[in-house]
Amino acid sequence: MEETKEKVSIRRAMSVHIRALKELYHLSPRYFQISTISALFSATFPYVTVFFSARILAELATLRRTEVLWKWVVIGVLCTGILGILKAILEQRKYTLDQDLTLRKDHLFTQKMFSMDYADMDKQQTHDLRAQIRQNENWAGFGFLKIQNFYTEFLENSIGILSGIALTVELFTSPVPASAGVFTVLNHPIFVVVLAALMILVSLLAGSLSSKAFAYWGQQSDEATMGNRFLDHFCFTGIARNRRMDMRMYHQQRLMDAYSERSVVFGVNGVFAKLAKGRMGLCSGLSVGVTVLLTGCIYVFTCLKAWCGAFDVGSVTQYIGASTALANNVYEMTSLLGELKTHTIYMEKVLAFLDIPNSMYQGSLTTEKRSDRQYEVEFKDVSFRYPGSEHWALRHISMKFKIGKRLAIVGENGSGKTTFIKLLCRLYDPQEGEILLNGINIRKYNYRDYMAIFSVVFQDFQLISQSLGSNVAGNRNYDREKVRKALIDAGFEERLNAMPNGLDTLLYKDFGEDGVDVSGGEAQKIAIARALYKDAPFIILDEPTAALDPIAEAEIYAKFNEISGDRTAIYISHRLSSCKFCDEIAVFQDGTVVQKGRHEQLLSDTDGKYAQLWNAQAQYYTNE
Ligand code: ADP
Image 1 (spheres, helix red, strand yellow):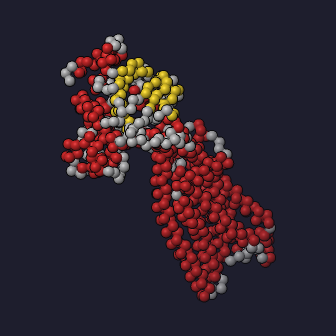
Image 2: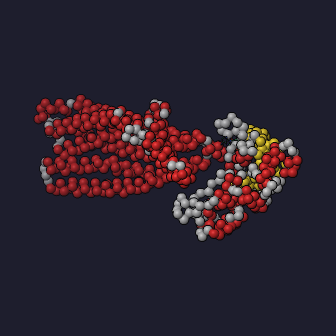
Image 3: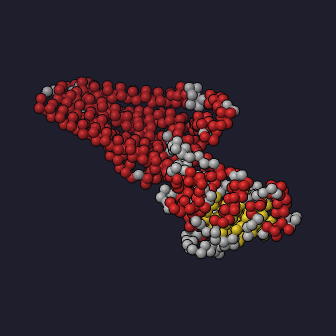
């Protein structure tokens, strides 16, 4: 992926990560409060241990006063004990909040998906972007998860550096006594400057080598994404419920196995293994190597000064412990800055997803709640093409819905019937013309208010693995009598009575063996009940034939007609006989309405599209 090799400035990296941090902070301020206190304890803990050990050792090596030794032991044990206990408690709390934050973050993505304009939600690019974000999380923990780590590491390293400096200062300022002769040269400021510079330079070098190794890792996102797709597809797709029969019948597992054997991305000969043996491994090795070298220099300098009498043996422990920890913290901080740069491109993808605008939600007019259902919708010279398509799916459509009447929409596949419904329900906005509700452009209405006036049973409706009642009501708390009535009206009474748990019956088996699988026709009835429960002024039924046999379909249409009551009802069907009792029939062809009228009227035009469709289908109906 070319973009992963792109140079990122530290300024850009910082601004992206600060923004990401703010987003996460909004999700769980508590997590960050606990995290901050926990980082404070974690970062100071090692230095506290070093400090007390140094005091005890110093006393042991010099005056060996019992009361002083006792004092240091008791205070040391108390301090480290209390700090250790607090640190453990805080880490537990942080762990729980961390899990909670991960859930909240996932919820944020889901919410975003549902709040963006439907057209954007439906775009392949949006799905690709979401898939990439998920892949990056899965293979390297890139994305919001990293921000949590970065934040903790940044705090711990900053506190670590400050504490390290505080405990190391005396290493440089304690002079070697004059009795050390030639070694008094160690008091020369040049030593202080050289050692301090060496500590900083080597830590920076080690840090940048480590972040270079990390960057190699980051550059393999293409391969990793592919590897994850393979893994996901070949390990999980095969066991999906809707594939099980084909898998068994046609031994598709053999094809899957062959592919998974070839997928070597994460295998011992994969790209990551090769990098680990090569450049990436070398950088990591060098990074550790130079750090060891630095530690060696610190040891020599400290021991030499102690040997010459600059300080006692206890201080040796303190200075060595503190200065190596300090160097380690500088190293970690440098690696962190490098990682931030590598991670920027991945984080930008997450922010780009969250920044997808939701322009449909801009309207502010409320639709007045009318008990008389007098909602008049009109299409005025509407044309529409799907985003990214050159082809007009609808062209110059003008139509007014007659309140409380039955409208049938017929036409061949691909003639624009479903698209027309999608525009009516404002899943998409037209590029030309306008749609009016009671004379006002629907863009001016509050989006949710406008959506609320439609109940639709889509062709590819979906139920979810929850109770039957919740599916119908779209809510966990619902009016049981109203749900029961909707199910009975939709023709589901017999099946409902046969269910021992009634409305509490769990649909499908995803969450338990006691779940019930329903047939296509039964699912259709539940979907219709759901539309009835919503009790909207418009009720729309989009070609329910996929799941139904002709008799069941005719039954549903007859029933639907009856239960639609005073609502404005729209049927889409390619079975013309189901629509002949409608008040009006609109015939679609290539995205335009070519005929409009009642059944007999349309049929009398023997050259018209309707007559042509009717005659083509007549053979099915002669026996009905
Ligand atoms: P019908 O419901 O009459 O079968 P549709 O409204 O589904 O027809 O489709 C009308 C036209 O729009 C067809 O040419 C179809 O290929 C195209 N189309 C439908 N959905 C999409 C989409 N999501 N993206 C691009 N083109 C689409």
